[in-house]
Image 1 (cartoon, rainbow, N blue to C red):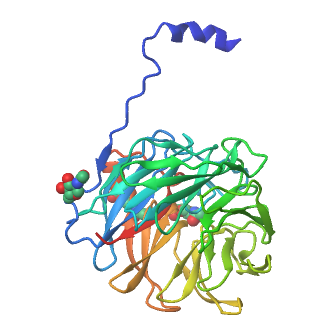
Image 2: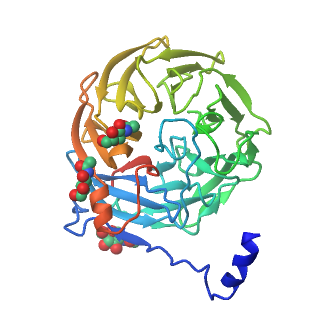
Image 3: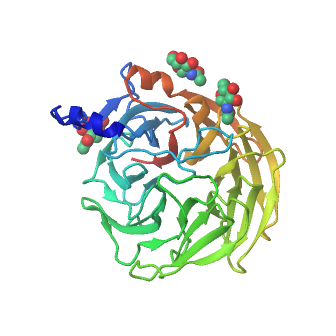
Length: 405
Ligand SMILES: *[C@@H]1O[C@H](CO)[C@@H](O)[C@H](O)[C@H]1NC(C)=O
Ligand SMILES: *[C@@H]1O[C@H](CO)[C@@H](O)[C@H](O)[C@H]1NC(C)=O
Ligand SMILES: *[C@@H]1O[C@H](CO)[C@@H](O)[C@H](O)[C@H]1NC(C)=O
């Protein structure tokens, strides 16, 4: 009844639905921008705001430190899943891989969970922190996209959706043209979900290609991986196969040289899936609460498991027989670390960890096994506020890097 009395008032107002278009670009270095000539690359994360999603860039300096550069409008909107547990509002998308980079084709892609789209950007040839949108955002083929994967050649991209219409969808990429939907790749995960989804359990976490690019793999936080076969033309098998294991398998990385995947798992610590035998083991990290993200460093040869709940990074060694052990743990105060990326800068590895709870980025130098050290803390909230860029810790998501010019 209430709505009927309010409605006539709105009908009388002109253009009530016309919202102002967010600015295309917002500088975050008005007090002096880092020199594009000196930068060796860039790092990117997103605001994931429902009012308008921005991709934020920072230059990577020759010593591995970051300098914030600018925010570019994705022409899409961010989203936030519903979580009835007491953990708090961090990790809006329940995912790893919401931003991807192709070094081969010089582009960056991100998901817009609120508008069910994917946006692609060209990386400027002289300034990798400067991105230009290619075309228009394209439909994600479902609802609430949360993670994407790009193949090695950079000519294929697949996305996973975790909302009411859940599942994967793939595209071709070509410079200039951007993304084009690929036939026979919209495949359902058959999750009984809503938009936005309620999680973190029963939501997809990450989508990846197998190293031979013959399989597309999605981790689902109901204790399984969903695996589709990819045909040479890029189309996907109609149904997925299930590899059960873990409690809430989250981030996915292949163990180098092995047909095995290591997954962070906030239900226990981490899981190792043997993809030859379709079996899995779950390994505990004592005291962990939300080990949801992970990265690999070639310099140390180890994996780093990131726990937002207790702000800890756990370094894990995996042996050639797929045994594993904890090498060291690093505590990060009240960072609330989420998505993290590793980049090699002048033969040294650096970890760029989105410190969601501190609204910043923590940079760690790897320095070999068991030797990681915090080398920089970047404040995001101060520069964003000064530039009128809307962001908050509960929405921040994604981290990816481009190294080179
Ligand atoms: C690339 O970046 C340079 C340096 O910031 C700038 O002068 C140039 O206009 C940019 N190119 C494009 C296509 O935006
Ligand atoms: C977030 O930061 C606040 C203030 O520093 C702290 O009290 C809280 O425990 C932190 N939360 C997480 C999840 O780290
Ligand atoms: C970031 O900078 C702002 C503005 O200078 C300040 O208020 C805030 O406390 C800083 N955040 C951290 C985590 O240091």
